[in-house]
Length: 74
Image (cartoon, helix red, strand yellow):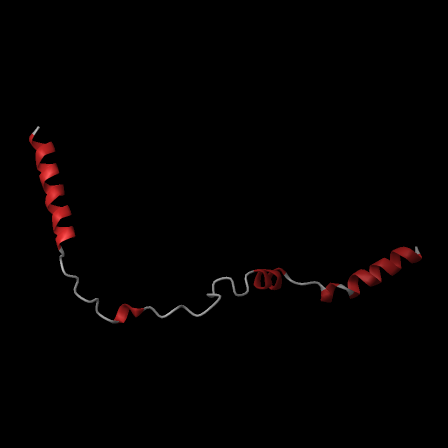
């Protein structure tokens, strides 16, 4: 009987130390949806410089159009 009373007293005294479901939830998801570091500032604010259409790209475009035209005629 003494053991039952002792376990009962220990159980009721330790109830206040147990974490609630909400505290467990908060501890599990703390900081989960925050970025781990500051995002890197990209240079997207600056306009992109104009890219000239050089001879190699023009040649590739012309060859592609000729190939497509040839395959579509068949």
